[in-house]
Image (cartoon, rainbow, N blue to C red; front, side, top):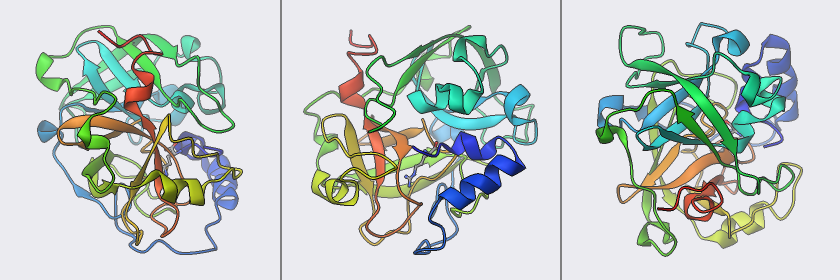
Length: 277
Ligand code: ARG
């Protein structure tokens, strides 16, 4: 994640710098209307486990302070990306963010009367997170008040068929819909597929963005490009067969053919995060 979405959200200057870092001049996204690039609007009522992470102090109030996604895996437990909780993104230790909130049940970030904002009581970052390769990109947020059980999505364990290449999957978020810094006010989703590890090994043998490590990452997208997660979607869910298989983590550009999205493999972080029953 050389380049967390959140970094881009930090402000105009950082955003411009970020854009310069992204090889935007090279290939253009195959479709520029997405989530998530190439996505469509969805109602959070149909996917109540998708939540937005917010800090108005740090990211401003225009989009309710949204800077990453998350997913409800227990009534008081939200999974997100470790890099969303990094000092680089937050400007200091997560433990010192006193307005860190999870926004649940709200599709339109501008619609303050809908859904609820729940303070985060505790942040626990995967001790195995490697910020060079991006391996183990996961963190657990403990909510100050529990959500209804109906918000919870089951996590796919190791060996689940949902991880099989070519399985259809859906990624959700409020991130950049163009690859050029156009953050969405409303929740979107894109239909993609789990792709063979070989495709991501080839795309990411050890680039400045990261290194694809199959044991802890999941490759997903479309071979032709076009549909993908993008900056601002990090930490949000990739769902297949009704189960959580991945968290948006990193990738080169957004929606480019030959540069699939890389997701945190959920089955690999359940135990390190202490989430196994
Ligand atoms: N690192 C980005 C974030 O912080 C996520 C990028 C995902 N990119 C992709 N092409 N799938 O939001």
